[in-house]
Image (cartoon, rainbow, N blue to C red; front, side):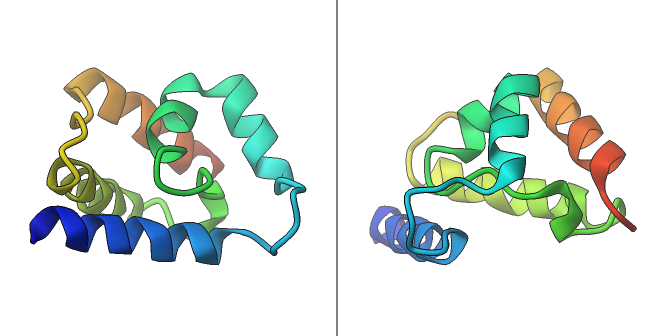
Length: 96
């Protein structure tokens, strides 16, 4: 039950992440070329998020929530090092 719930969540997030075209948002190419960990982990269920989607203060809880979804989907959780890399990237590029 938890797995199907996580898969539904991933599908919903994936559906909301694009504009319906095959073009990727500009930040996706930036993330994939400059931050492999974010692209590697976040691209499994949806397009990597724009760092401007949340404030610096919001990103830690967002990362924790997404990591929980990964575990529920039986995907490996981020290591402490990976979590710090992702958080540093997102917070350094956050708008607020």
